[in-house]
Image (cartoon, rainbow, N blue to C red; front, side, top):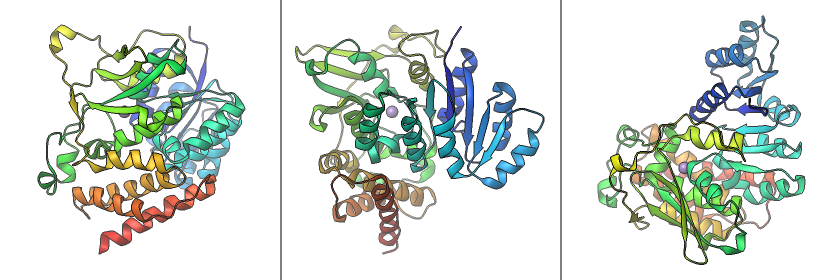
Length: 383
Ligand code: MN3
């Protein structure tokens, strides 16, 4: 019987729903749930898991949910502050953050501040404020465990070895749907084309980020923070089959890889059950059936956002937050057919290149830079 309890923030999104499957499988006690506004799904989750609290970002929807589940003992809260407060107040062994976008930052900070271990699926947290988050986690003596296949793989490959024996982290990248294409061929790509072929079960924003390789760039930044490794010791290799989830090279040139069928539930479960392993939800890996695994260099000249992530990490300060904010806005404009696929890359590059950086920013500085980056993208996109 699994003893730990969890709070799942962002429980109705792609990762949230897969986390719910893991909780169901292992009868993990769910203490709190939050979502933006999908109250039908929340109601079903409340009835199944009977959490103590449920917070909804949309306050009107929170009231609606409150009347729907008035026959249960779950306390319903509404609004952004309620979500942040709940992250601090809820008592649980693991705080799982699968909130989408920058709204995930403050709840992570609150959970760490209250001394909870965090399973982190929200990328923005580490990309925009990785230094602040990891410093706070060290001070509070809490763990930040990754819920992403690449970082979960690296985390597993690092088990048992001192960090000074690590020479390089090697992140694998599926390459996205447009692997092998050159810039000219990317110009007329529509949102529908970009959303057509994901290997992983994931949301729209991250599917576009995978197509531009921005997602891999963010993962490079996250890896630096999570594992305290310099950005120049993090490499990316394209691996189309998504079977090797990432690797660690040691000083003796031995490379450890973690493999498995691509399934996010594996990493969600590992973060929740660490340091133990439990029966998995994913299929078993059949290498003979797969036949061969291939590798290629990432095309940083075409997919410029990957290289920009390295530069942003080296620049530090506010630049990773500017990169994230600009990209999120550009992807939003692309999904709404306002700009071309290649404009995502150009707009983000231009906004990052012209932003005035600050060292050691506060959370407020980071949030301000995020808003400014978005505004700059909107302005530039109209020119
Ligand atoms: Mn990933």
